[in-house]
Amino acid sequence: MIASILPSISPGTLLAGGVTAAAASLWLLLPRGRSAAADRASRWLGGLVGLAALAAFIATGHRLGNLGTEAVFLTVALVAVISGAATVVSRSPVYAAIWFALALAGVAGVLLVLGGQFLGVATIVVYAGAILVMFLFVLMLAQPAGLAPYDRVSNEPLLAAVAGAVLLGVLSLSIGRLTAEPPACCLMPGTKAALLAGSTAAAETPGAATAGVDMLADNHVARLGGELFGRHLLAVEAAGVLLLVALIGSIAIVSRGAADAESVARRAAR
Amino acid sequence: MTMNLLADVVAPAPLVIDGLLVGALLFALGLVGILARRNLIVMFLCAELMLQGISVSLVSWSRHHGDWGGHVLVIFVLTVAACEAAIALVFVLQAFARTGRLDAAAWQSLRESNLPRTIDRELPSIDTVPPKFPKLAPAGVEPPADEDALLEREHV
Image (cartoon, rainbow over the protein chains, first blue to last red):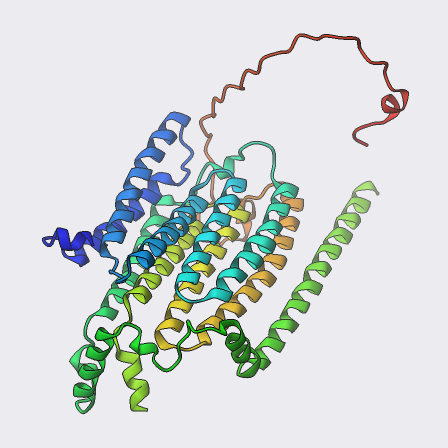
């Protein structure tokens, strides 16, 4: 979008700048145990740098063809990424959990736009409805009053941000290569003409790669269920056994821990 | 066979590329959080954030290939995440019962012998001024004290 207005900046440069700015913003935003005023200043600066990084990533994004789809995708993706960043940098774990709930809402929106209607709803129901509530229960059981000192410092924030930037750079580089023509070395000579014909056909009609199965047709859930209980029936059984084992295991760990604590107390009393 | 090869090298649609980028961003954010934060529960939240990035990428590839495998895999990711959260939170509760804090550095005696010890420095205090609320003037008649309530104790 913006890349067409500013043709002098290549997408690669834009992406590299975005990754660097994202890492710098995360480093500025992470808690580093500084005084309140310095912390506030660095959070403001980090937020601004983070907005610049987001703008760079938006500029490298592709036109989706349909303005409505584009606006919806941009909104839910921004909600997901911004709330994800807020989850990572929140000082209070309760706020981190709330931000994670908002990130889940954004992710569910992204899944809906990408054609996973069932998964979008299941993410909200299972994650935000069950798993996140479990996190909040444990927080209420275990969180000390006020802001704990270990929530105000980080382990090596600079190195962590650099590691994230390296991973993001490698991933976005390989994602960017997907749009390019596949290198000639990797093609069999006979298929090249067919490939060119195929790629132009794909360019003319977006989604031609998915010509075999139209995933957005109706009966979405019915066909997903057919796939799940047809080809993947054994895996479903295994997942059920896994859930049962996890349930029994967590109960066993809790009750054994209580017995341990009792025996420790008895030994101390003796 | 040729058809499969062709399907693999056709460039993905723009929506698929953007979905993959969002997935990569979420995964990298979760990685930074799990490396940098010290609160055990926030670390688990960041692990879940990485799983969300994986889910978005899987659904993008599923759309690209026109195959339900990605969707099915995301359902299994949800299942395993539920199991993982149940067991991990039990472990967190046990760790909290032993050390009294949710700090990953409370378990640093488990580190490798050649790694330096994490030593916390003194943090600058957060000089938060408690908010001043207006005080209401007492008015009316004091109600008679309830004898049962006086005998109850809040804490044992």
